[in-house]
Length: 395
Image (tube, rainbow, N blue to C red; front, side):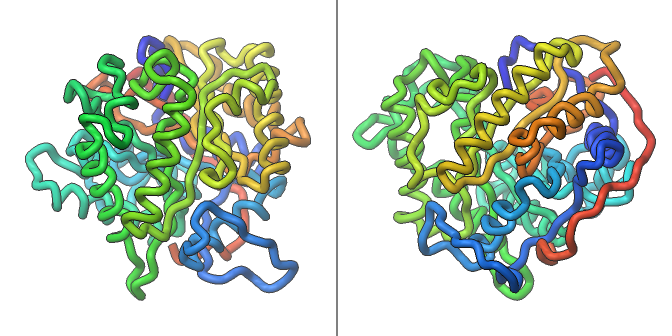
């Protein structure tokens, strides 16, 4: 989620729009399910952050590595909990399915559920109930055949306000030895409980791609540029991984690093706060367009995505376009998604993104502090999503 000062628009069936564009461009964006074993054939070495990760988690990583260049998986934040085409959260309805007959391949959730600030969490619920709600979301997405991702819009642990409150030099306060370190650990404890509580009917832990401290090269979050040093950022990212992996024994997480655009194709800026190969599984990249799909924006995006893909190949990581969408006022180009996918497809490196994820269809008002920021196993193969109706609506 980029700068809060940028006005974003949501689309009814924003996921469907992307999926239709993908189908038209020849890039399949398909539903997927997570395998518990690596299929027969040429095996791929799996080197991930957690060398004790579950077999399903390792298989997900291997699948995503093999996915490069074969098609881009479509992701949608809060696909089952917010939408324009359904009112009952039954774990089966989604705007994407209503539009194209299939769910997104990736389902995004956020730790705001734990605070009761996003559905299905509730501010009136007990802590254990909100933890269970996040676990349930992960199970529902898995049952739909999808991959789960979890972002973290964490509260300001110094002031008690939200993630947009950049006062208090928060990172320095939550590091070991800091006065707010215990509160940060308590927050991570809730994440651990929710993720460890997400199991399939047979007891298998469901893999989740965890994406903390995203868009940190911008200044709109308390963990962002100007509010902490590069060294502190690297330290808190590493501490988070180590605490969840080693202290809490969470074995079903892959870890994503995802700065915000743009870098002009130069890896120096992207790697300035890189926690290191031992702490990252997914090299992510967030970018929203406020230029109405200008050639300059598309060229810059493709250059950066190619840079991320190149780094991922060098480091043995998964490259992903972890948040994308339009921003700005109404009256934008209805062919935006088609142009975007066409530009990505045309570049031999940029097209190696394994997935692209849009933000949530929160509704027709500004009720949420978040504007559009932007299963049974991964074995069914890829297929283009079927076209559906396209609609646009002002948030």
